[in-house]
Image (cartoon, rainbow, N blue to C red; front, side):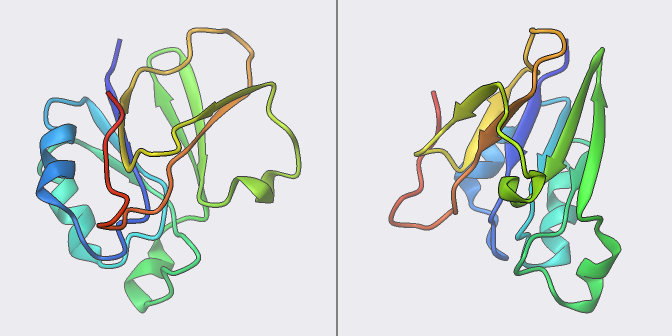
Length: 131
């Protein structure tokens, strides 16, 4: 099974702690508010990257990023977007990581279950990792 690194809200800053947490993953999902295109270049040095555009990604380079992305990881299909409220539905399974900026995870093992994970903003005062 693939190991997936999920990160969002980097706002142009890729912290060394985030890079360390992502080392060894099979793929990286950046769920928006990237901040600078070179953030994605740095992440691609670790693993293949799937990224979506967030509400603060408005410079010319960011318009190449999709608003949503479908990522196939083994037999799991992951739908990625920056703002979960744009879905207009309530997922059956909610996975929230209120103090995480970077998450290493495997896809949910439940079949046909709609799940989401919430990755809050990566700010120096609140930056920590899920264990």
